[in-house]
Length: 343
Figure 1: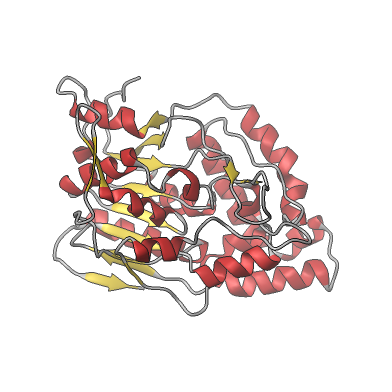
Figure 2: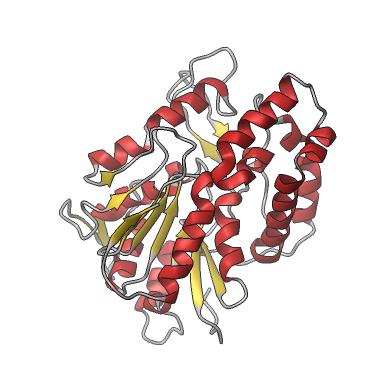
């Protein structure tokens, strides 16, 4: 399956295709349904869709899954996510508003979610939606069947595997080169913890992009992909490992372990009545892998970092997506100068 020629400039969107997030606790738990967070993708596509074509990929070429938990209204508040979370929690618990009442009270969040779902239908085609969890937001659960039906009615789109794209890039007769891409963006949700982490083909992709000076945009859990940068895969598919790789020491941000633990204790990933833990924390794994990880004290505060020496742009979650989209737009527009900045 080859990438067709395109008249417009192209960008690569890499999504996780993981469907289940393993848990280290409770012991022998089968894992929880997972997927990508739409809000961490939609703002990027919205910023570029009028002028760019998108090549869609997942690590293995399978269709990605939309995480229903990311459809909760509060996640669509961007930098105001802290205030929105407090407000919607109060409205749904203390005031006991119904899902329809909650939507009436939060029209801007509803409008943004509707726009992002419409964008997803235009660009992503038929994709599955994760099953709800015991602590999934009730308003998000109330719209799931409708969302599922809307995606089921669409034709399937092509999702290339990372390996397939690299092999096309290396094929002199193919009309595709990773170096011709305007940028690459990878959204989060917990799913990247499964198939972006410690993945040799992901590592080779990162290095090919670096060699072509293609900006790499990663948000929330997606920076875990950088743990794969120690790998290279040659044209014979032989894998080598080098800890002193080109990305070592890159200044980045991501979701903090203390924010993750708070989610595991009180929010949708929590297994009711049992201590819930992940196999690892993204920020800890990245620090151990040699990255310069900068976090916010308040997990809901937006942070975006651009390390121009490695052409890596990172954001710490849905609260940062608007700032990240604005930064990426400026980076793509003008690649002059060499600096590292934070927002």
